[in-house]
Length: 450
Image (cartoon, rainbow, N blue to C red; front, side, top):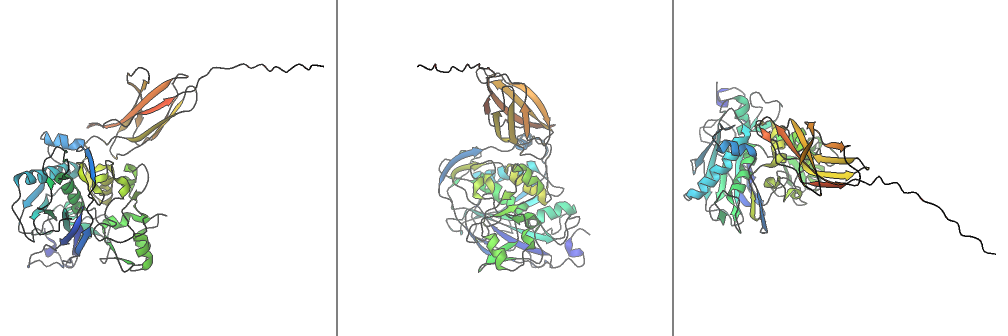
């Protein structure tokens, strides 16, 4: 039996979850055919706020994408149906350049996510969305799909298909991505949007939601609750600032509502924490609950970093063509297997400080989950010539250089590596050792004149 419709007891276990895109007020509809035996629920309107600031920046695609574009087999097949039968609302024809940008973003995901089943995406070019709404994503959640590692839990349809090894609902796409055809889009793929909005960044963001960067909590009139009978897999990794699972709060309750709007909720999965320097990942939790934005995005503190694609807003000129290590860690925690043949992410926040005349202490953040080790390099500050100082095992985050010379300035850098290759280098860190000169002092006492 290859379909849930052929398995007894599986009715009423698929729910439609509609999510806001990066910005605007979205309208999400459940996509189900009249013959579907499953109960589909729709979440309705999901408003989000557009960030109108100019934020010129470019974060390039991950190394795996370079390999993919060189015709290496992708980790997953992503099939796109442009303005297919699952689309709703008022549609217009996709511009050719826009389809190229959408395909480019989906190829980035195809190079990263391992899936045994093709991921089906309905891409809709809509002209009836509000001017502030850049895009929305809707996806279905399946309770306890075959081979799911955690029971009494909803999984996104794309991940459910992967776990089951087959399409569970053949007539329904894994996600529906609406794009506002009236927005001032930059349709290139070179990461240079100028004063426009980068379409590749928005699509990359939306597909991440469809893959499972989603939760099932909501707040209404100050009371927080789960929308569904059981949590989504994402919800099982969320906690308050003290580490207490959000699922331990009564639902519904004002206590849950308070924590969801208190500015202190975190994703605590092991892979996400490792990618975040060992710290739990702060989620977006404004004091006023915003459906589709609150809780299902990274905190604004991740802006202007390699993890910024999954913050709730995007600025003009901002091009982020990688999910970043934190989002990759979150997807790993919920059950996806990312392409581990890609080179690791670069270590972050390298620091160096002189301990003595011959020792320098170094620390950094390990932002990857797939490195085999690290290469720490050193050069004299006065004459740059990089030399390998030491190779370190996976998971390392500190080292003491005990071979430094006294009174000398050094620069350090570090990169991660695995069988697929090496990451880019970290930032440079500078340190100066102390001098070992010994000073002799004589004490002269004034003569007493009588």
